[in-house]
Image (cartoon, rainbow, N blue to C red):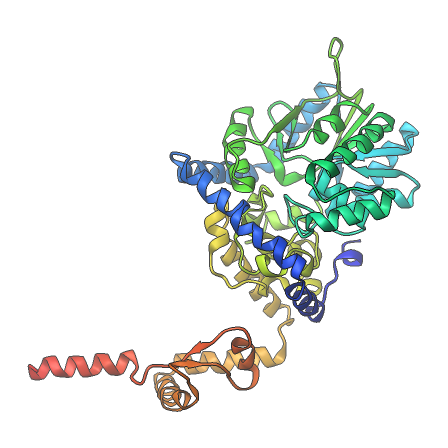
Length: 478
């Protein structure tokens, strides 16, 4: 099922990237990332005393949890069952879809409301439920816009971040024959009225989960809108579909992640809504679901857990690496082709869906390290991207021309004679084509570099030559 939706060849990525670069509206929307979310991330952590130590603590908890994940999952299951809930295990997306379909079928349900969930996007749950005749309504405002537009989310936190307010208004007006203006409060008021009716009619509420607490059997859902809380409390049946890597051992661990998650995602000290759901409604409780189901999704995570890419499972889906990434901030999320975009998407999408279908993603990075600096759990994303590139080489997916270039380059860099000859030749030839010390056009395959920026002309004397002359002068006593 993954390959059906995720295949995105290299030439498609290049075409999508060029289309994104030529879209004024998208460039306007993406330009705000640096001014809002990325700046908020930096400021929030700067104002938090000991923030680096707190991030180390979050990383250590994830590391320890994954090292004993089987035991924590067993504890989670026992806690949920003891409180009257049901736990299901899905090996892949197809199994997860089948489990959710069966829950809905047994309930005789026809209407479903959903809070924002990237893992349901990962398995394309909406499409499969709609094929079964189930009406699915996204209730997060950004996801609602995306659903109406028939598009995929472009960001982990802001799914409609690629759209301007004008485009959102046009989208809603065309679908609902409304006459909304672009003011956010006008569109929000319309969505609120429409979605409240959907909540009242829904038989089943489907959510994701930011964290699963093994100790208590609690699903933690973090949002800045009240839709998630309504999804968990109004419908008779609640289904949470969560990846197995979201487990944390203890309730006492949760504040560590809540402190770093909100700051990394939006620059807030705390998200507006943090819902903790522990099983179905019990006697004497005013709201909550009568029936609670947790679907734990593997979908390749166990395979990653036992590999050198294990660290990618530390991700808490905050979107900080997207906000700071110079590549994402120019091409947006859709160009990446998969459910997950940006630096972390370039790491995990090939792991989930295969390197052959996603050859472009690990190369959609300058390896500048900004993503690692912004990550609230300090995932070494550049190193993981390099490992993905190495895996492509091992699977013989690297273009032959590229392999030849690197083979020649490796030979040159290992030979002092050829290295000196290459640098001296470049130092004597390239300045002929320079203007004011810069090369504005390089030949052949190097032309891509100077298509968007200039290349500095090499110095007339290399560092090695200058060092040799300096040492000679010292020996002579000059």
